[in-house]
Image (tube, rainbow, N blue to C red; front, side, top):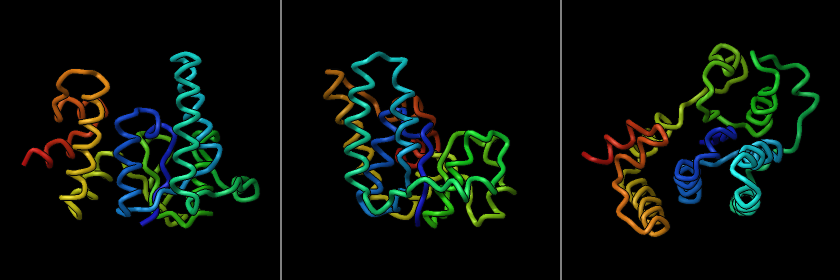
Length: 180
């Protein structure tokens, strides 16, 4: 399965690290464009220059981890597509050009199902997407999420319970599935 990761799911560090690790484990193939990664990096600018520099490094590492998932800009394809927010057309064009099955995004309003279905693509919220990966590979996903939790704990220097960590990034179903 191939999935485009919209910039809004790359910005929360915990969510991005889970999605990236699931891709590295071969549970799906991330599809991306330079513009999507650029949007993610620019979103961190509000946190200050140090955060933006860190995001630039993380974006470069993401690109190196998934070189086959890179889709170049598709201006001709973008010109024929329509979405409620024209600024999101490049994400759909990336999905089509990259033969992605899904776009993983929190942004449901700007990616209506009928517009995506006409192109053979589905919109998925990150929680449902990761819950589905967890259902198919529970041991792998449990290990991935635990590694991300342990990293957060090491960085903070204090205990980081799993459920609150996942709830902060709106992964409610995944949190519940991992508790069972």
